Image 1 (tube, rainbow, N blue to C red):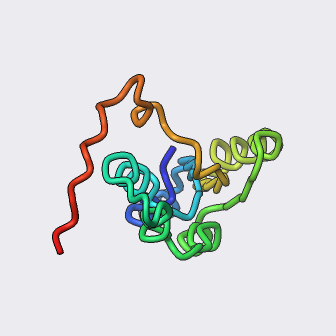
Image 2: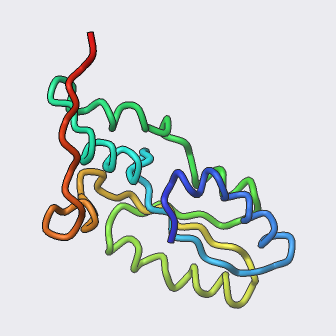
Length: 134
């Protein structure tokens, strides 16, 4: 399980799996954003004047990760719901285990869902906002 930004940085591992016929399976959580960064920046340095600034700054440009995975020798699937994921899994497991073909599943996720480590109940308190220097 990997985020879309991490898959862009390290996804070429797929070519090694393909070359050696290793049926590894990647589940890529796709929200077109470096969300761990943008959510963290919003949490610790929220900008009331431009609340969407961090989401805008860390967008990935909507890359076609399925095409990227296919170009490296994998089978690739795009899903947008748990039902779609459940539907492709038998074929994914079959191709990975029997044929040794790497499998990449691109799963669309909700980028507004906040992970528990940014929940004030569980995580550190946000830093106080600093005054702008003018």
